[in-house]
Length: 458
Image (tube, rainbow, N blue to C red; front, side, top):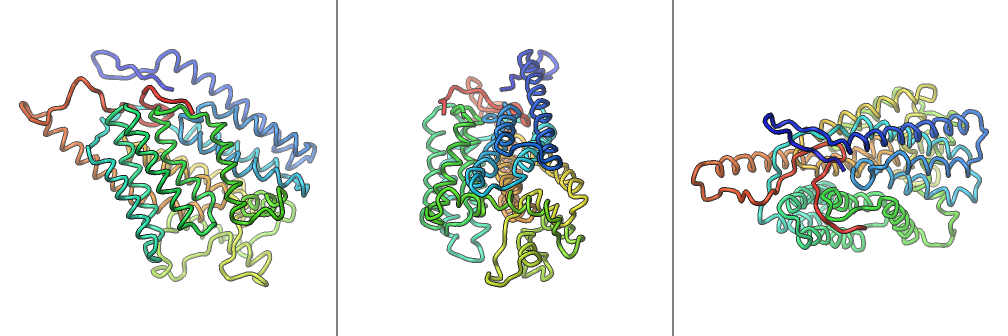
């Protein structure tokens, strides 16, 4: 945790000595993880000299080693959960089918993630106080329940629940800013859990386990950020794996046992990426990668208003490689973040992946700045990175923008209202003068900094 101390006189902030020591230790751990995964990637993908089972054990250790801030930083936490749920979990099934080159893509995921974590999570800086109000709990209930009600409307289904989920997250953060008491904080989290649980049990059609995990992960990470409890990210990641496995059994049954983990949609990014690497199969039009980049920013735009809107890579992959014989017109496959670029650019895919890393870093840093002092917008962004690693750019955009489009202007509006309220309170003799005996603000944004409160350990 970052400890910021205000220097007397000029209002500047400095990091404590312990923070410098922690930062140095994180740098060493990241460098070691980066080196391990780079060696594993080349030995597995190019030399074929590394046993996949040993390689997975090494990369899993590097994942834990390289993200010591997991549990405090939402980005690091999402990366660790993704590593376990999307990469490590399918390995149980892949053991039975002897899939090759699995370790290489797990290692590349860790390398990509370290780059995101180093450059996409900027150091803390001073921020304005976070506003709060007495009706925040009511807004949480209202937005979530409204999202459930509108789910029945096909035209509003996508935007309604995503928007309600995102806007309620802002008010959950405001509750944490108002008080350090456990009861209102935990109540806000439990409302989230209850509504999302109802959504999954009653309205959910069975697909999209990553969607459900992302919905549930955001309020937990926000609550952990404010130290309501200390999140043991390894335990949490294993719990996420267990919940994902339960979701798979509920959807597909247990007829194929553990081996089914190697053939369902959770494992397809790994197996298809390995297939593309071995066969160099590619799209008929290499230029189609431009369409996927367009979808990264514009997939939220209705197809009715964009008749020539490109198809996602999962649909194109089925059309080109397997054909439509025996499958529906809507059938698609998740080919993963690396498989997507390999499919369109088999000889220059790594360049496109590096460019994507830069874009995600810039998007995240911009979101931190635009959303400050609120942390909710960037957490709403982080949890959908699981979809990016699983399904690629179009799948990521189809989910993240339905949260960001409403939450960004909403935070800007609330921040403006908070500023006006503070100006009124600063008027001499104002009845709304704040209680100087209680600090209800956060003073930093970015990085893994968070307010310090006394909380539970999970």
